[in-house]
Structure formats: structure tokens, C-alpha cells
Image 1 (cartoon, rainbow, N blue to C red):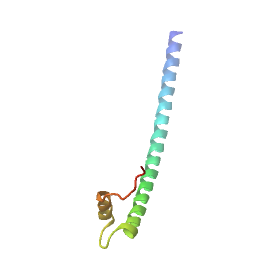
Image 2 (spheres, helix red, strand yellow):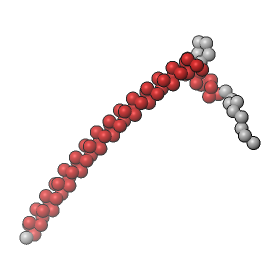
Image 3 (tube, helix red, strand yellow):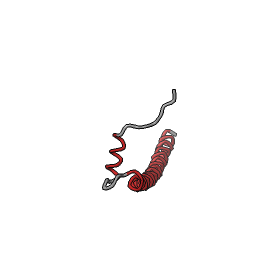
Image 4 (cartoon, one colour):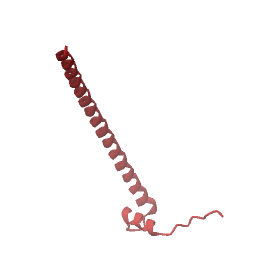
Length: 82
């Protein structure tokens, strides 16, 4: 009877290990898929942002990166309510 209990415990442990390994594979594929989507979205956003800055905010001969740096350093002209 003790041997039967040990066999059941070993069988359960094998099942547990198989299930955990399966879940880890699923987790890895979901996370890598999400990361690929996120990278694509961020890349597309940066491209749109650069084109907007180049078309509307950059001065003559200024790259989008230079325009962004200039705008970060310029004081804002926002009015604050009192």
C-alpha cells in the first residue's frame, strides 16, 4: 500500500511538472507576442511624432530631434489661473 501511495505521488508530481511547463510556454509566447505588438506601436508613434514635429514645429534646417530638444528648453507661455 505504501508503494501504491508513492506511485500516485510520483505520478501527480509528473503531471504537475508537465502542467507547469505548459503554462510557462504559453506565458512566454503571450509575453513575446505582446512585446512585439508594443514595439510596433511605439515605433509607429515615434514616426508619426517625428513627421508632425518636422512639418509643424521645426524651424528651417532643423531636424525633428533638434526641434524637440529646443522645445524642451524653451519656457512655456501657459497662463495659470489665480
